[in-house]
Image (cartoon, rainbow, N blue to C red):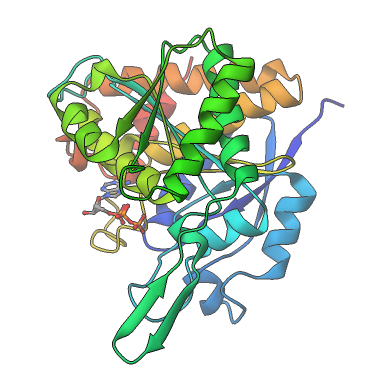
Amino acid sequence: MPTIHQAVLIPGDGIGPAVSAAVLKILKAANAPVAFHEHHAGIAALEAGGEVLPQSTIDAVREHHVALKGPCTTPVGKGFTSVNVQLRKKLDLYAAIRPVRSLPGVPTRYEDVDLVIFRENTEGLYAGVENEITSGVVTSLKIATRTACTRIAEQAFKYAKKRGRKKVTVFHKANILKLSDGLFLDCVKEVHESEFSEIPYETQIIDAGCMKLVQDPTQFDLLLMENLYGDVISDLTAGLVGGLGVVPGSNIGVEDSIFEAVHGSAPDIAGQGIANPLALLMSGVMMLNHLAETRKDDRCLKAANAIKNAYNQALQDNQKTRDLGGTLGTDAFADAVIERLA
Ligand code: ATP
């Protein structure tokens, strides 16, 4: 009996359940050898009468090691701490890897964007250590540790070496944040010099880096940075290739990995059947490639390639959702991809 890989599905909230359902339908049609166990987090978990991040959801990811996750809303201001941030911290998913590529049939200002964002996922200002010292005065601690800065640098250079990326650029603000971003820079430099000196490496102050990114993104390749900068730059670079509907991501730890789109729960379009499922679908393809590599299973690779060819073909045939200038709804786009599965 051939192995069926077990994975967790966290549909999330907002547009999450709709894009998750579309992606599951495509994975099934592509004969991806994966069985999903559904667990809740965020508002969906609260509505099901549980905790915002149920222990059973964390345990399920620990058991199966791989999860596909829809977005979970993070309320602004008071309310619960971001479920996304909590999950990454609890499971120590220290590396967010987000490929940002131009797509066929999706015309944008630039044609050949091919970037990878490496975002440190567990500390920085997103450590969530905030205090009101006295009325009207608050502090938010930015945490940087040698361990976390070094391991994200190691992952980034390993990835660059394995995939033949041309250059690693660190975005930072060490001219102002001399200790925290200074430590990040020191760690990256040490990793580069000790193990990866053959890979071209440069540093870039992030504000000037943003200007250069929008002037000509093709001058960059792999971008490495701490948590908050990575969050912002992910959305900025998404805008270079068609928007948040087309940028996938993975959150990788030592044991466990969660694959999720860069976008949030998009409450402005939730429930309308118009969300683009492509970013989560591409995250699903990343998950299949991860399974193919870690479990040595060519069926996962085959399904991943078939889905990738099918969505590229659908886009080229002008089968697009509204965010990309098309007219299709979430389900109709999923059907257009399924029709093109070889
Ligand atoms: P968060 O801070 O929770 O990550 P965000 O800042 O990434 O959220 P989103 O919720 O992703 O914000 O939405 C930003 C904008 O992008 C919204 O106008 C939303 O409608 C649009 N958007 C996001 N994802 C999609 C999608 N899959 N399809 C179509 N439009 C989307």
